[in-house]
Image (cartoon, rainbow, N blue to C red; front, side):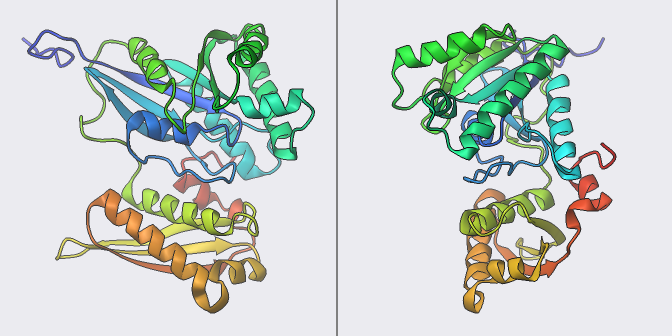
Amino acid sequence: MTENTSQEPSGQPTRAGFAAIIGAPNAGKSTLVNRMVGAKVSIVTQKVQTTRFPVRGVAMIGRTQIILVDTPGIFTPRRRLDRAMVRSAWSGAEDSEVVVHLVDVQAELASRERRASAGEHRSVQDVQTIIEGLKAANRQVILALNKIDGVKRETLLAVAHDLYETGVYSEVFMISAGTGAGVDDLTAKLASLMPEGPWLYPEDQTADLPARLLAAEITREKIYLRVHEELPYAASVETTAFEERADGSARIEQTIYVERDGQRAIVLGKGGEVIKWIGKTSREELEEILDRKIHLFLHVKVKENWAEERGLFNDMGLDFDV
C-alpha cells in the first residue's frame, strides 16, 4: 500500500502548481513575486529588462504551494538575447497552470492623456503585443492592474473595462506590488487554482535559483542601481568561483563583463569608488540571504560580444538558437 503524499495527517489535501507572471518590462513583475513570496527572490531595479530568465519563487498559502514564475519582460526583440528572453517568457506562461498579465496602469493612463514618456509609450505597445500573443494562443489569463496608488477608482475601472473587452482576460485584480494593496486577494485566487497534489519544494524554500546564479544576479542588480543612467544593457555578471570554506563562510569570485573600455571605467568609478560600492552592497545582501559570511571579489573585463556567446545563454537557461 503506497502512502498518499498529497494528504496531511489532518486530512487536509496539499496543493501545488505553477503561476506565471508575464508583462511588459518594468511592469513590476519581480516586485510582485517578491511580495507574494515574502522574500527577495528576483532582482528589482528601476532599469527595465533586468530579469533575463524565469526565476521561480515559492509562496506558501496554508496547505497550498504556488510556484511563481517571474518571467523576463515581453517586448519587441531586437537582438539575439532579446529574442531568447521573450521566448523564455512565453515558455514560462505555456508551462503554468495559471497566468497573470501584470499591466502598469500608470503607463496606460499617461498614454491616454498624451503625456507618456518614451518608456511608457513602449510599455503600452508591449501590452498590446502580449494581448495579440494571447489571442493567437487562444488563452485567457488573469489581468492585474499594477501601480494603482493615487489613481481614482473610476479611472481604474475605465482602463480595466477597455482591456477586459479584448477577450483575453478571465477576471481583473487591482493591486500595488510596491505597497501590497490587493496582493493578498490575487494570491488567494492563485492558490484556489492550484491542483491537488504533493508540494514540489520543501516548505522553507523560497526559490530554486542556484546560489552561484543568485550571487551573480544580486551583483548585477547593484550595478544597475548605481550606474543605471550611464550603463545601458551592456553588463553581465558571471560567478567564476564559489568556494565553501571550513569556517562556514564562502569565497565568491565574479567577473563583470562590459562591451567597451568606457563602460569599464564607469563600473570602476573614480579611484575604484563605484566597484567598491557594488562589492560592499552585494556582499552585505548575500550575507543576509545566504546567512553566512561572504568574501566577495569582483573583476571587470571588456568583452565586446558577450551577449552573443552560447555559454552565457546556457548559464541563464535561454535558447541560443531562437
